[in-house]
Length: 130
Image (cartoon, rainbow, N blue to C red; front, top):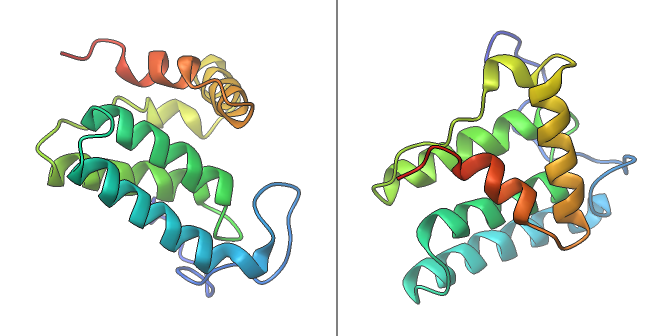
């Protein structure tokens, strides 16, 4: 993830892209995402893995940075999983950066989640899970 460091790394984007929320709402949307996640975990609204799946999708959907959003969201979720005592998901990260079956399945699952169907993303991330 850190093999290239950009001058703008860690700063929210300042323009609209073909994906993501309006750039002016990024800080607010990220804050809402964090607050929702804390509420879901505190009140056991969903099982912990489900919370992280939902947060991952929303973080990618917000698309807070000019580049590296998927990598950032996967790392963020791994850290959250560790914090709540769960093992990380098998992101197949070594294959997500290049065109191939793993990346295609991941993108398809994110697009389905954009349409409100989390099943593909859930199946992809929870396969071989306890």
